[in-house]
Every structure is written in C-alpha cells, then in structure tokens.
Amino acid sequence: MHTHHVLVVGIDGVRLDLLPQLDTPHLDGIADAGFLAPVEIDEATPTMSGPCWATIATGVTVAKHGVWGNRLDGNRLDVFPDFTTRLALECGRRTFAAGGWAPLFLAQQGGPLFTAPSRLSFIAPRADTPEGWEEADEAVTAEAAHVLGSGEELHASFVYLGAVDETAHFLGCGEEYRRSIETADQRLGRLLKAVRERPGQPGEQWTVIVVTDHGHRDEGGHGGRSELERTAWVAACGPGLAAGVTPPAVRHTDVAAHVYAALGIGLDAHWTLDGTPFTA
Image (cartoon, rainbow, N blue to C red; front, side):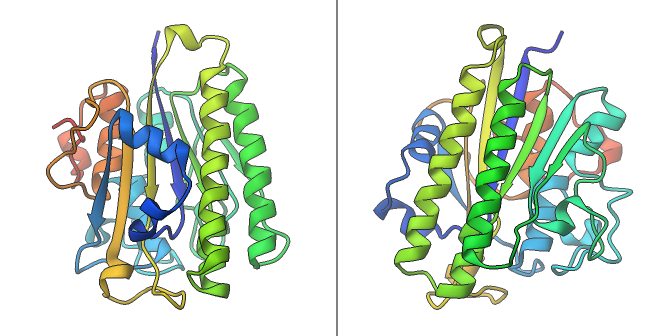
C-alpha cells in the first residue's frame, strides 16, 4: 500500500567545516542528489546530544520535549513522541530504530527517546572508548543493513552511529576523528546499498536524511556556544527534493516534519510541531 519509505541516519558530533576535506562519497552523493545545509542550534538548546537528538526525533524544541541534557529525566516525550513511535502507534506504519547509546533506546538515564518503534535493535559498546564505539557502530550497521535489506515493510527507520563523537571526546578533532568520519560514511554506504538491493525496491521511493546533532571544539568537547559547537547540518535527498536546491533555513525540528511529509502524512495541528518539511 505504501511505496514511500524514509531512512534517517544520525551520526553524532560531525563538524561541518571539516567535511569538504574528507573522503565521504556516500554523504556527498546524498548532497548532490538533494542538499547538505548547515543547522544553527538555537540559543535555548544546549549543544549536547540529548537535547539535539530529542529535537531531531520529535520535531519540537526543548521548551516542549523537555530534554535539557544527556540525562533525559523530566522529559515530555509522552506528549511529543519521536517519529518512529508516533508513526507506529498513531499512523499504522512500521518503524525501526537501531543504535548503541543507551538513553536513546533503553529505559536508562531518563530514556528512552525512541519509545516504541515497531522494531528495535540496541547494541551497547563493550566500553565507552573510541574502539568500543567503532565496534558497536560496526555491529549496528551490520544489523541495520540486514533489517533494511530483508524486504520487511518498514516505512521509517532511524540508525544512530556514535563513534565519531566519542573519538572527539577522547582524542580531539585530529586525524583519528577525521578517519572516524570517513568510516561512518562507509557505514552509511552499506545502509544505502541494503536499501538499493531490497527485494521490493523497484516499487519503492526512498527519502534519505543524514543528520548530526552538534559540532566540537578543536580539542574535543561541546556544550558551549562557540560557532564550532553550535553548527550542525542536515543532508537529504528523495522525492520532492530537487538536486542542488537547498531550503532557505534548515532546522533540527524540520527532520521529523519531513519524515511525516515524505510518507504522505499531513502534519496534525494537535502535534504542535515546530518544524516544517524541507519542501515547504
């Protein structure tokens, strides 16, 4: 019945200013087929993963979702659910979420952010180290590629990769960090390949959105208001997104809004989303 599908890939802590220097053919391909645009994290939002991913997933700002830090306690996600949950519970769609950062997917540290997708894959890193996270991202990618490539009817999926951010925290934004971004791009390529090779692919139309939550200072670290920390980005391609046409001002809240629009679901006024589709 539904031929439209959306894949959102969240890569944590990728600096926009470094992308032109790096070998990221899969991200470049999405940008060429659609756009890659900067996102300025608004003044009210801490430049931290918890608040930024909550804004991306729900389509509303911190004032509504109530996630102010990397602990998600006190949130209002029951009122403003993530898109994988709203689609599954209210819109009758099949959704999938995968990743390794506990508060996004488990009832830990005030989570989960992704409350009730139709299908969930959580793979924790064995240690909070760059190596541990690369391993976890590798396993998450393998699992997500398997699920996405299986032909299972999944209308919207979110895949989270966390190694880039962890590398910056441990080692700063030097050579290892740059390599980690290139590795994340290779993993993105494997997810895109899984989608391309789906059994029903010829009859499906896919929107792909890749997004980062925040940047990093040179020495590694974020949470402040420097330009490096508050600059994020979104890349997207798919039906209705013309190659090379960048929306006027892209915000994190627009991601969830575009997910609904790409699936042909009108934005219910009662949801009080703060974002608009990229095509608006």
